[in-house]
Image (cartoon, rainbow, N blue to C red):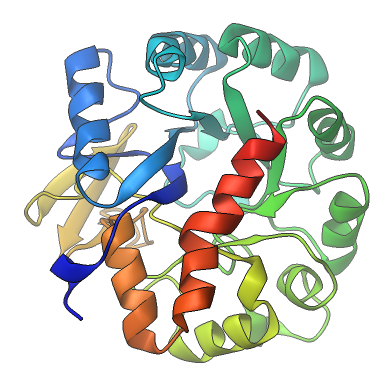
Length: 298
């Protein structure tokens, strides 16, 4: 099967943009182009993910996306930051990262008018456990990730209602880092879903095999696509950070860290199938489970 033969109807819970644009773009025509690109490449339901910005900027970005939520063009909004660990910031501006404050989170959710469906939080930060517990009660998916946390931090977050892991194995410990780590707690001692970026770079083949052996029906395919999805190799940016895309792999210019992906859901599904993941598991990861998660916060 070629990539062109892969179907559609997929749900992408973590996507920042495509076709040269971000969902944070102040020009709504550009936002629409990014959405349409993914709709033409296998995605039917989409959460628009926003990277770390100042709180006033996030309020503005959220407000601009509400019309797309109200007309059903997108299924909601995902805030990936600013409540992330500086040492695991990835392609987020470290100077903008902070510990979660409930009043601030509530104000962002209020601006979202019911359309913020997921917020990523590093559970070891001050105030994070209370925030995760609140999000769970408020019918917002509390995602955990971009974390320097420990095995115990992961377990504590799960106990209070964490609902998914943001790009498992990225922005956290690797499975090879030890037997009792943040990553091993999530894979072996939880039942929550794990986002997987299946591009051959974000997770090595041995770990992919382990993940799909241990948690096949908890795996969720995502793109984590940045603006270069669907575009040529070259120079791009994420917020204020410069990015180089080479052979469709996006890395920060400053330190060569991975900076999102250029995936589409069609490509992610094709990659998983080509890797040998069964069609039932791929369907669950790209359609059934992510759609169920969205339904749970509708």
